[in-house]
Length: 405
Image (tube, rainbow, N blue to C red):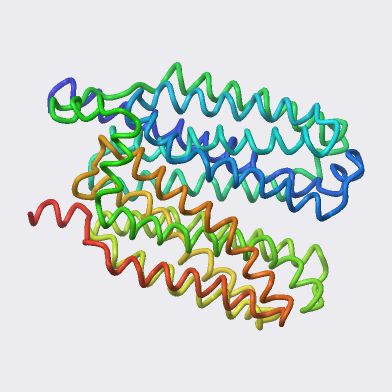
């Protein structure tokens, strides 16, 4: 091993640590904390629950309209600049959110948080792909995605405890914003782009539009986007409704319902650490994503009926098998015609489709809930299972395929 190789091998762990920090704090905590202070926000801004639904969707809408461009910008200008800028802007929008005086200003800052997120989300997998070997793609992305689960679970648990001591939701939001800006600065100072091979360097000079157009010419990129649309739409839909269903239909206490949802998130952390790493060892992706997401979807449906110990078991299985989801962010790095050089554009397109699902699936599911409450569980769980079926249509990727080829 040369000194250059040894340096790269060591440096990749610093890139991973930064990626986990971004997903844990900026994404997991910074995105989720506000669902625990909805009552305070609505009272402060003199809004009703219908207004909150529009505010909450503003983040997804901002990401939806920006993710494709955000990924292409990462391909053109590099992950150091674009991810660092994106995380810092997420922090700025949090600070400004704390100054909101009504619905309009709150909507603007929630929307712009989603736009800033769109600069970051597609390009973190690209950064990992630059520094990790193909046989470690699953592990690196799994660990990073597990960071989101940790951040979200901590936000659910800690926000109610710290809200009063820090002085309310505005002060807490400001603190989170300043800390997020610091994380963006840390990324910019410590994460660098890796030198490309000549052919890849030429691809780096593609314009933003040309990079997106090239990825869109690949059939598997469309199939992967559909997989994202279904599983992210199913996730956003079920997480937004499950606690209410457990309380209003199943007769659970709010504390018990919150515990079950937190259990799903903690189980997802375990799954995201284990399943993608196993995929790396075997060297294949479909063998893990397809059964994992199908079982997770089936567990969603079962959770609409289970109570007591069976519900705990179903929740654990849902989260653990759902840990196959990060593999959908690995496949673009390995896809023929995309690879590391255009991974930002490919992931950006997939995320755009994912947040389109995040806008549409909750609406369709809640309409079905109006007919019969458990119908939403069938619909959103079915989205996960259909995502698994579509994944079968992709060409197999992974280290084994590269070696065999």
